[in-house]
Every structure is written in structure tokens, then in C-alpha cells.
Length: 108
Image (cartoon, rainbow, N blue to C red):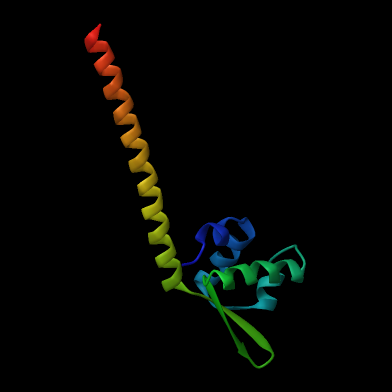
């Protein structure tokens, strides 16, 4: 299971993913799109690879990065479930709080 929060938690990584949604890109193309160093971009790409959000293939002397849409979709669904569970817990807590307040009000 990928850590979508780690992958998407940085604006640079989100920009890289935005680039890859349109087309596969070489590392050089990705580096040239940013005002940060090649090693910094490589670090971001490594995180995206580790989380299986992107994949890389080598074609000649170029490394081509591709958005792994299936993995991203699964991570997205997991994130929605997690957020839904959090909201359910919060709503349950709110419901209990309100009901306890009504009980105290009814007894007065």
C-alpha cells in the first residue's frame, strides 16, 4: 500500500504528477521545468517511485517517468475511505455530545 500522503505532501511532487498526467517525461524534461537542482528533483522522483505513484523505464540513455494511474487510483480510494472513517468518527462523537446535552437539558 502506497503512502499517498508522503507522495502528495510536497508541492513539487504534485507539480511533477501534474506534468506526468499529460504525458510521459524524461528526467531532463522534469528537471528543466523547475528552478531547483537535479539532485533535489531526483529525490522527489525517488519518493514517487517508492510509493509506486510513478514508474520509470530506461530508453537508451534516458529515464522515462510515467504516471502509475492504477496505483494512484487505489491510493485515492484508500484516502477517501480514511477521510470518510474520520468524518464518521467525528459525527458519532458530535451526536453523542448533543444527545448528552439534551439529556441534561431534559432533566432540568
